[in-house]
Length: 215
Image 1 (cartoon, rainbow, N blue to C red):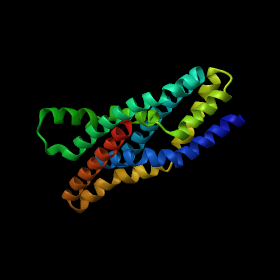
Image 2 (cartoon, one colour):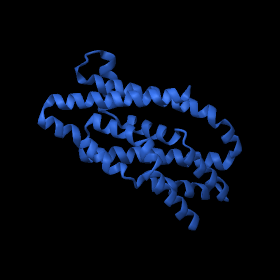
Image 3 (cartoon, rainbow, N blue to C red):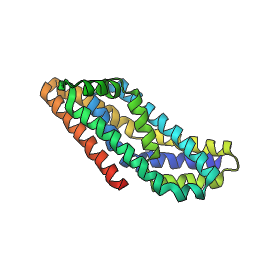
């Protein structure tokens, strides 16, 4: 129980620190750009977080089973994840910046698939958030891999850590970000359009940063 509580506290600190700084700007730009409102922002955050927790469970088992072998291949794997995540985020950012005014069949199709019916996009963002290379995260899974005496015990540790990351200020910030477009739209419709373009460009910039880190 002491170890479970320890990794839960680690998850809390991670959710309020590295996760908030690393994943926060991306997720907030996405929620704000899609203008979800309160309930949809909460659902998106929970879906994003649960997807990330499932990745943590898988990573925990991999570290437990393969240990040093995983650490040896981490650099190569990280570059692939960074590149793919960057491409996906850039695509979402471009679609968000272009808005509904673009009549191209391809853009309309992608927008409907990934922004208007966006559960899959939120899940993919959560998966990438869990996979993106992060030194504190590697340290946590190295610790749980060494501390656990069985695969089931490792799953408990990873789940406790993931549960701690969900309790984050990012939830409150996501709700506020989701409310912004509606508030701007009441002031003047053009404000909301400009705001969506800015959020899209922020996502494109963040995606380019990830691709840059992969090179």
